[in-house]
Image (cartoon, rainbow, N blue to C red; front, top):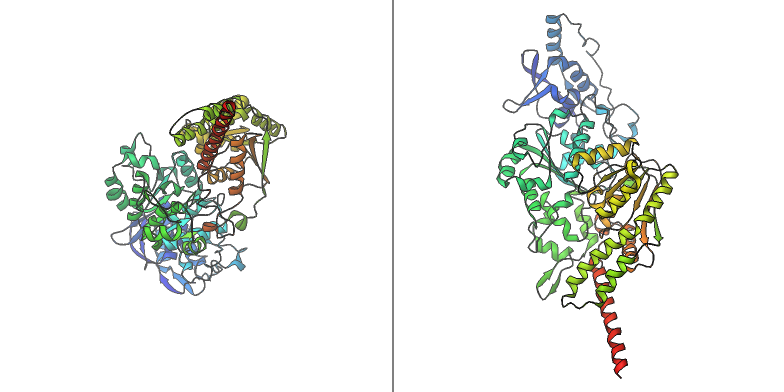
Length: 615
């Protein structure tokens, strides 16, 4: 806890506004922000003063008095004097009379024994293991706007405090723990403008979450890809832009203008920046621009529930964005942790080695908390349901492939695999709709996922006006409307593609998810599952995976994903099971290999029969 004496002074008074100043103190700044709405205060960087409305001084003094605790006292007599003169000049009753001589009564912050007592900022502060005994953490107290109805969970408060303390950090809490509000709290506690970079489908969701936190819509600017130049002129404190729009703005604009203007940048779904090339440099325009911005802005928060989506190397650019020592030497990192192997073309880093060691070292720049360990979450149950699907198109594609002649077997296998996977998905739609109908008859709202627009169209057609959709061809505004209609109970079914509706959404109106088909990535499936299994969910959640009986592709993919979904990863969670191994790094590659083996076997049998015929 802090201890000592801090005097709050008044530099000048003009037009019913007071310029107050004090020796810089993080806690005092947080208290001032909590006591005075954002619209009622302005920080002057030239003389380091806060310009506030005199009428807000009673609430400020009261807050300082309540937060004088544990040997720390905020002396506000000059504020009282200024307000008394204001009252005399305007014939107003002096509301300070009951505050003079107030005895500090605020319980110690972050004291779990006192969580039932009233605390400032309407929060309960409980730090996770490893931080509650840190003497520095008490200086990093998150705050919320006065009058805000937002009530954070203890883990969100502690997470925000950790972000504030470390400046550049990866928040890798599992899906459902409310990383968005945690980051908003941390950003709100930092002076200056805030930049949020997010997938396009989540821009309006971020705007709404910031407004729920207590920020007026006028202080938020959502940059549109169609009006980038005009939007960049907006001086709103909170600016939201999607990753794809980074391509529309010349990099000099971001580095020279944005980086100098912004004190905080939040990268939502930060695994979008993972692309890395063979030399450890960003492997895409998106990751390159994101890294440049992260290096220029003083406070960088990366939010992702899946910092490693498939391979260990996925996390390297994220580590560079937060300045981790692990990212200083790519080849040292890759050789130590990415299972380096040599082939005829050079070195490959697609594996995973020394996982326990990497897990320990990530602790200095990454906070990972699991929802089941933090909250009293309901149970989540997965069921794999075989159905008699219409596999005529699937079988036709398979037979054509097995009897075809093509020198480039890998390219041919890649092409036919995608077509067969979609054919199997379409062949299951009728059975998926039957299951959804049964669930609706039992009073359930249902979230349905598929990887294909054609499958989504057929499901939506079946349920008509009871259904809304979130797919790649639906605008951001329409997606937000669809979520609101579903969450309000106006619509009973929401159909999403895994790519468009698998991240960033809260669909807790339902406790049932039905997957018509499978994505190749277990991480993407897990993200989609957790749209219903998150804060606000009170019921046990049922996840139904539909697979085609006696369909080799579906059964194989189902089995591989089940294994991965049941494990959470040794590197990030430090648990016994392995999520990432070199052998099963790509489900798609495994399925292609199986197809090629089937074709080779079929051709061998055909040759054998021909030889027997002519023997």
